[in-house]
Every structure is written in C-alpha cells, then in structure tokens.
Image (cartoon, rainbow, N blue to C red; front, side, top):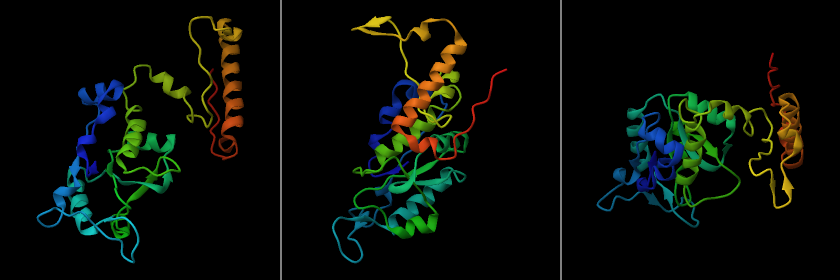
Length: 231
C-alpha cells in the first residue's frame, strides 16, 4: 500500500473478521510511505499542474522510485491506482484479486498523480463509485475488504458467500430472524414453513424483484450466469 498516510492502515481492516484473519496470517499488509521518496530537505512529493490550474499533483520522479521499491516486495502483484475515473470495482474483480498473488495499490492525493506514471507502469485504475474522496486510502480499504473476505478461512460459513448480492448477477433476498412478529411486521409465512423448495423459490423471486426495481441494469447486462441446478 503506497500512501502519504500509512498510519491509516490497517484501520478498520484490523477489526472483526478481517482483523482476525490478519492476526492469523491469512492475509498481510505492508505500507510504503511515499514521502520517503520525496525530494530535497522537505521531502517534496507534489508540484503545481502543468498548464496551470488549481491544486497540486503528485510528481512522477517521486512515485516512480516508490513503485519500483514496491515491485521488489511483490513482483507478481498487479499495480492498482484508486481513481474515480477507473473501471468500477465489481464482485468479479474482488474474486480475481482474492485468487491472485496480492495487489499493490497506490493511493493518490490532491488533484491526482502525473499521468506519465499511469502510462509507464500500466497502472490499472479502479473506482469504487461515481464520487470523489479526499484520497485513495478509503477506496483502497474498500477494495481490500471486498477481496479479503473471500479468502479461505476468513468467513466461517463459506456457503453464505454464494448467496450474496452480485454472486449470480442479482441483489440478495431479504433476511429475517426472531422475533416472529416485530412491531406488527411478521416474518413471511413461507420462511417458517420448513419447505426448503418453496423457501428457495421465494428467495429467488425476491432477488429478481429487488434487482428489477433497484438495479435493472444487472438484468440486462448479459453477464448474469445461470445458477447451477442442484440434483
């Protein structure tokens, strides 16, 4: 993790299931302080934009050596740059990151980074949504959490991962628990019927209904796999 604020990590990733997995050695994290590669007595890392304009831009001659150092730590890891103009982070991408050799993530600040760094290192730009944050650190944590939870041994009931939103191109069905009736809102009778075939059908119908209402783009994307039929 290349950042100007390494003290932000592991942050929330050091808690709950991700934190337990970190302590258990299922995943690991190493931060690199970009300012260690800064220039001059003051370790300068940024400068004004070429052509004018507001803000500051992280310099190529600072990020280059930082990335070169990062690649010596994990040469096989893809180089990622958290950016609002990047490709959207998806569940499929999270699975790919979880099954790969790890990731090296650059978190930008200010107006961003010199474009030549992206071109020279073939950085893969990744976005977590159509909005702008103060820096890439929080976005990196989202990406990391989405992949860490998929690693074997992180979540106790691995079967639960198969029924989550986006795993089969649909949003997840509603969940209920005790009490049976809460403030005049009863648990649907079908979930108390004990008929697992009817429960599965109800959940599938609910997923399709919620997806059609909230994310119709998923239904028309042409990428939704057909769930395997159980014998």
